[in-house]
Image (tube, rainbow, N blue to C red; front, side, top):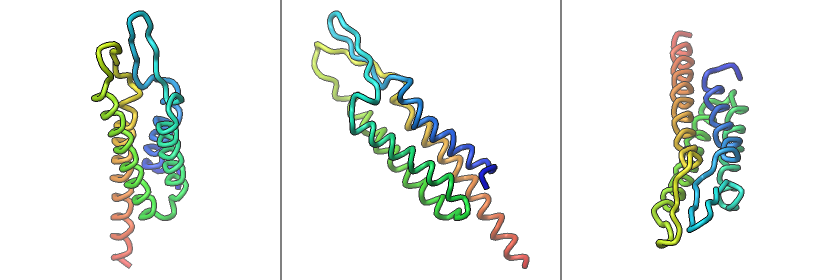
Amino acid sequence: MLQRIQSLYMALSAIVTGALPFVFELWTLKTDNQTTAVFITSSALYLMLFGLVTILTIISIFSFKKRQNQFVLNRLNMILNFILLGFFVYRSLNVSGETMVSEKGIGMFLPAISIVLLVLANKAIKKDEDLVKSVDRLR
């Protein structure tokens, strides 16, 4: 059912990874006399990973009849978010030379927010699965 709490968590995760990267910058590059905000559209890799994470979350929302499948899809989604977060950490640690200064934007932390929401969704899915198993034992 779509009115469960895990559907709300996954919908929030889809919004965090699908819409907010276009609003918040990933990082800001400062040169001698110019400041440039870098958004998700500047790199095809980031755009594809954010898109894949969002699509996987939406698929997981609509597979509510198969809770175990939903749980596995959320785990896969968390792995993809960790990969995306790893790319951001790698990028922030390998800032080029003295000519450019890079400041982190809030967009770099969106995968971490998505991971937290997916963990909460998996906890709720596990709770529902345990409830169904306990009712089946009574029959």
